[in-house]
Length: 64
Ligand code: FES
Image 1: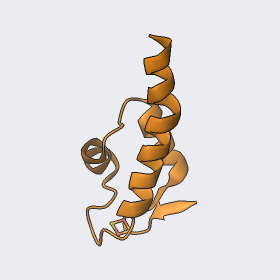
Image 2: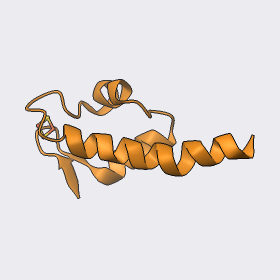
Image 3: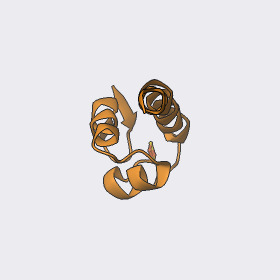
Image 4: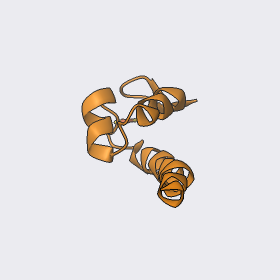
């Protein structure tokens, strides 16, 4: 599913980047350029980040 139409970025690309450590809004903007044109995709990018941090970072914190 396309998230950022301006830069032709799909949710799978964002999820892959987050899994590789690109897990902040700023780093996603630098790496994939999401949200750096019209900004319409920002709420969806933030939702993906929130989902990622809820699922994976919280689990990591509990494991350590
Ligand atoms: S849709 Fe992502 S910057 Fe425009």
